[in-house]
Amino acid sequence: MSTQARRLPHRRLALIIVLVAVLIGAPTTSYGLWSHSASLPPRDTSTSTVATPSNATCTTEAEPGEPLWRSARIRWQTAGYPVGTTFQLRLSPSNGSAPQTVSVGTVDNYLITRGLLSGLVGGLLELLLGGGRIGVNVIAVHPSGWTSQLSSPTLQVRGQETSVLPVILGGVRCA
Image 1 (tube, rainbow, N blue to C red):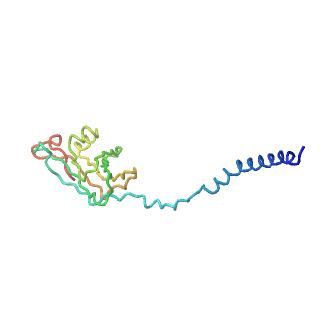
Image 2 (image 1 turned 180 degrees about the horizontal axis):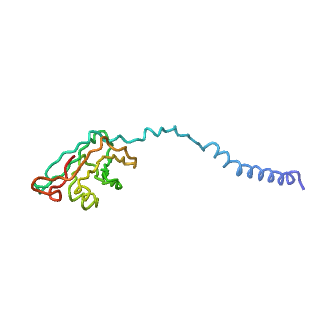
Image 3 (image 1 turned 135 degrees about the vertical axis):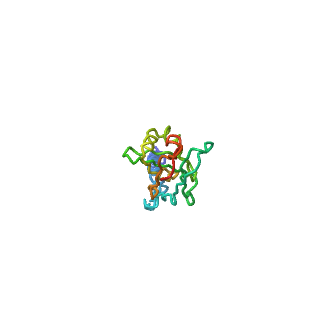
């Protein structure tokens, strides 16, 4: 056998060892070169609060289409809230019953009617008929789901009774 023939198996063995080393080492090396872990800056959770609705007011007005019935219109400021912010009214009976929440959408006012209190929030009309009051607060709901604190002060509504009409026909008014 010639010297060249004896070197051929050694070269093949050396070539195989180099190829195995490259095949094993290359992915590990490339992962080390290409991977990157970035840390995010810390977030302050106080920046994720929703401003409490301000300047909430209550005015008594005629119920649409029913000039003898009264309703209570609750208004609040919506300036400064991001697009998509919705609002809720929290109705808290003075008799200690559980508060009810009514979603009112993206508007800046809502008309509390006799029909709302008797149908949607059953039992509140009966409270009004007995002379009780209902506390009303506005809540802002950010599109992310975060909610604000209750508006302050708490507005009050009660049954409207006139000398001619009993409360059931008179409707609701601001207290």
